[in-house]
Image (cartoon, rainbow, N blue to C red; front, side, top):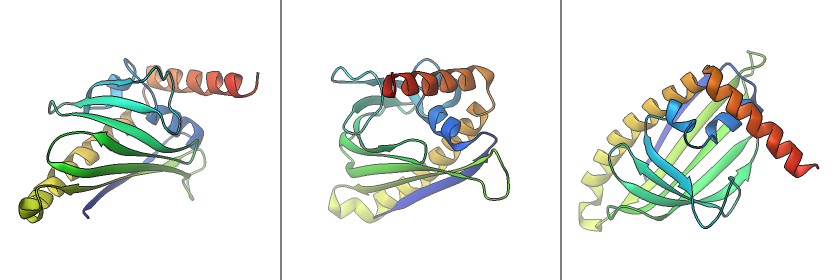
Amino acid sequence: MPVVEATIVVPVPPDVAFAVSQTTAPVRYRWDPFVREQHFVDGATRPAKGVRTFTRSRHGIAMISEYVSFHPPTNVGMKMVRGPWFFEMFGGGWRFAPAPDRPGHTVATWRYNFRCRPAALRPAAERIGTWLLGRDIRRRIAGYARGCEDPAVLAAARQALADRAEQDHP
């Protein structure tokens, strides 16, 4: 199964880095060049394990994904529930760790794995998919890094952290 991965160091601590990654519209559109439309479904109002989201990419491709893990500030994982015909399976995980040699910075690592269909076309489709997704993940993580320096994005991320802390510990 093909895997694409990108890593970048951002100038914020892991809790803020994680919160930036979970921003929603319209703030997310400031940094995420991949997403043209994204929202929670089934009445959800914030990310959590089991929550589903609808995403339409800049390519026009739509997908419903589900959080399979949600562990702020270290990692989040998702899987495709419904998506384009050419993906038999699609999943991803984003990890956030303190940068070992740069206090106050975070190493963000994003990884996607997928399997294409139909099986007869899988070898060629997966080579093309690895190239396309590799290009997209590099662009996306670069946009994320810019978001980690954008005052509006950082303000929204910090507000989300404060709101979550208040909801979790009233």
